[in-house]
Image 1 (cartoon, rainbow, N blue to C red):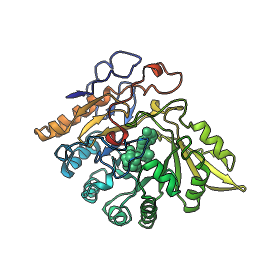
Image 2 (image 1 turned 30 degrees about the vertical axis):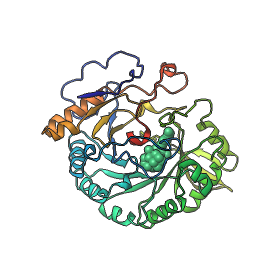
Image 3 (image 1 turned 60 degrees about the vertical axis):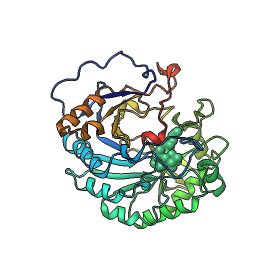
Amino acid sequence: MTIALGIPTLAGKRASPGPRPDGATELRDSWGRVATDLRISLTDRCNLRCTYCMPAEGLPFAPSDQLMQADEIARLAAVAVRDLGVRQVRFTGGEPLLRKDLVDVIARVAALGPRPEISLTTNAIGLASRAQALADAGLDRINVSLDTVHAATFLAVTRRPFLARVLDGIDAAARAGLTPIKINAVLLRGVNDDQAVELLEWCLARGHQLRFIEQMPLDADHSWERDTMVTAAEIRASLDESFALVPTTTPRDGAPAELFDVYSGGEVRGQVGIIASVTESFCSDCRRTRLTSEGAVRSCLFSHAEVDLLGPLRAGASDSTLAELWREAMWAKPSGHGLDAGSFATDSFVQPERTMSAIGG
Ligand code: SAM
Ligand code: SF4
């Protein structure tokens, strides 16, 4: 069943993807891409209110009986891994650490064969007391969102005074071996765009890999503006003033971040990634498929349609029916998000109704 979200679909180069060939087993779309990387949102709730993601107040949350339960997540993950060729599973949200059953969910997914690589994207609040249990359950790696190491800026970005808890969580993740720790940062003009070098120094000193993410129009306040967003080119220029950035030779292999070795004083200090989702989009090599916390497939962050799997699962659908619904949803994946400059669809881009917190970033 396709749920139309009430907004015109993103303009594409053709009206329809055409019929799906018989016999495909994997999650192939009509542009030839195959999704092997699954992002599962565990909740649309969060204990921060980052300005580029959630509103200060007033966002309605899904009722808890509409969220996937641990056994339902495990069942859909099993279909993805066993029948659809998914090899990486990343848990996200909202804030996934708000799920009390997170350790159980991770243990169930770690028990699947073939064993997928399991990672978590989190704001790290509450991680200090849970990092070791998550690692013991099978969590391999962690990405933590941290846009600044200044308490006042943290409050301005997240609207909450919790920087110390985040830093404690990162330290605990390192002790638990959830490495390499990747730090995700969004730069906002006039807020933290003057802190890129300082944040990179902070990460290099601790052996964490910093990745700057271009701000995307997925915020509840609809405050994103193409003319004021901080671009990847600006971020590189600002880092170039203090470091020498040399593109790595490792194949990108579908990864969203362009990676650079960071040199200073003639020595390599570590790496930095830049995710230029808007200005240098990587849609043509996208390998992602997403499940919302309510158990619907989204083929793209910017989709305007979702395909419900949880309803059919609760109504008794077989694994093969769920797999077919998932394949059909991915077949219709658009070629790109249409945000990149020069794209055919730039002028007709329509922001999805769901915010990043409700999709699962
Ligand atoms: N709450 C967790 C966290 O913040 O890491 C997981 C969910 S959050 C939606 C996942 C990632 O999306 C975070 O790294 C966050 O910085 C990023 N994000 C949220 N809104 C964004 C936006 N409008 N543009 C770019 N990245 C965004
Ligand atoms: Fe919460 Fe993550 Fe969104 Fe910030 S980016 S409001 S931490 S879901």
